[in-house]
Length: 148
Image 1 (cartoon, rainbow, N blue to C red):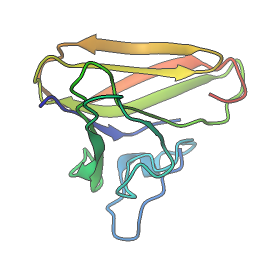
Image 2: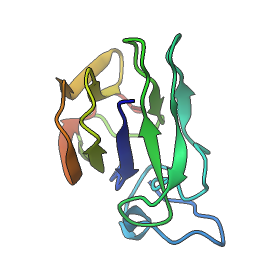
Image 3: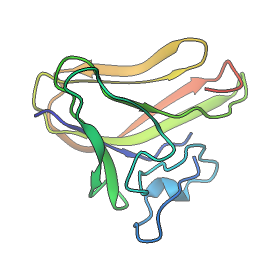
């Protein structure tokens, strides 16, 4: 089964970890806008989830890049599982979205990252992505609305 693993170091959050969780790297980032940025609640708490209509396989499990947890994605029927958060933004200001990603390399696979204001904007995407270990992904965008 194909799996993408995400450990958010999202510079869009103030992370909320449980008392027993090891803090993730994103918890220490000043100005972070996301909640539960490293999934240290052990769940998608604070995140909106959208399971694939068929073949959905995503959740939160152990041993992230930092901290105790990561999010994994492995939908198998050609449609993606997705997560997101709405955050307050200032139109015209730049925002940086960073996260650590790794792939098990099983194909077919695909991934995308983006943001939504009045429409969805893809910041990056790929298909048949080979296996790789934790890699920092970094995207910058300009907000056009008061929430993104």
